[in-house]
Image 1: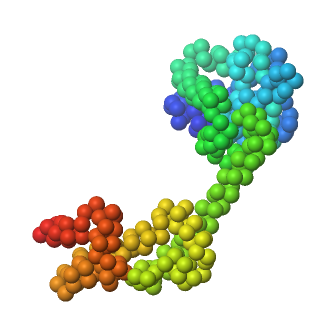
Image 2: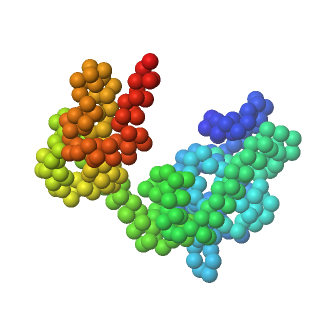
Image 3: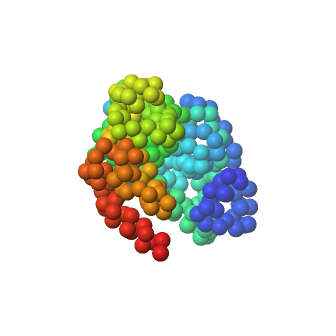
Length: 313
């Protein structure tokens, strides 16, 4: 019961009197996977709170089962169409997993609603959230394509896709199970590729920093790939997809960072010109140096050096 009260208290304080009412009237319910909690065309007599497990709401249309919602831990569940025992339910609710629930009879709940402000307020907030979620879900299912529905579900229900049966989620999102599986696999491959790119990218950065490869004016993607032990194609893919840069932009960023550090050192600036630093950093010409510096910094090297001197005064 502490979990239920904790969820309620995130919305509004719960006083001692209401706590005592819940202690007195709450029932513990265990339901096995596949067991029906309540059926269509019957009155749902309780409001349920999921302590552990998952439930789904279903309805039927022309012999086809349609999933209307999925609820897990910390969610309230009851008949939507017959809320608080006001009528016959148009959906049935089934356990997706073995579930532990707390239940309060609608008669007791309605009695508390009749005089307890805080309970009315809490359930108003709960219902507002439910209807907002339902509206958003209905909108994305009506206008979104299969990929957008998948992204919506994974964002709003992190971890559910690996936990719940694929057919159930597909029904909720109105997608064919085969389509959902294909989208899921494509995103899994994409995530795996990002992890793989990340490992290669970190290896590249460690090597370039350690050996200052960028200072070689004859450096090419093929020669750098050989140095770090990968194919030039793989290195290009990592640069484009992980760093979002071309080879020359990636190397020039290192060169410019090296030059900026040198400009910040008064002793170096007393003994070297900007052009000399550029050649030492790996640039093959003055024009290439100035063009790359302005592209990265938005100003010429001379303007940057004067700006730095002014800031130090």
